[in-house]
Length: 184
Image (cartoon, rainbow, N blue to C red; front, side):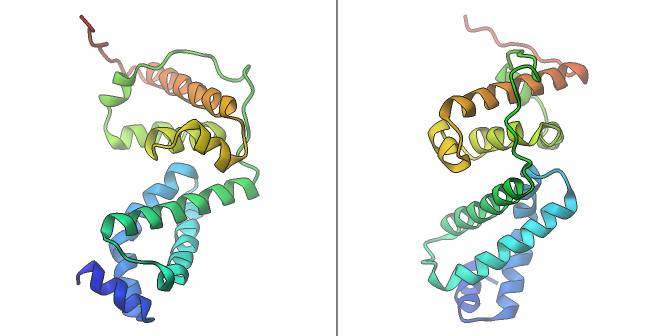
């Protein structure tokens, strides 16, 4: 069934329409949750909590296309994950001494599959992983990240830099090599 029709029916309380929407979008949203939390069961619980809030707020949502709906639902999922991490106090700013600074070349990540990248990202400490996801994947700037997480922009930049350094170190440990492109 067409998504606009399902949204209209779900707004009117149709459980069948809600189930169809869930079935269509759950896998994508679970991957969003998994980028923020390591544990599959926690991610599944956050997915359900996020969809609950989504359906609860759906009557007030002004449907303007699939992209807007997807963006709104994704934002709900990210917020659920961030609240979960705060509640568990899993978002810890890691000190300078924990991470060895190794510059990360963007090309290293470009040569990996999405699954390879995902598997590396979930190994990052929660603070690094959160900032990396918000910046590199969600496209937020450091000001937005700082405001959302209640940290300074400098801390956001530092956490991103350290996340990249750890990713580089993981790539080297896994003997994943890359060729740096010449700029000449």
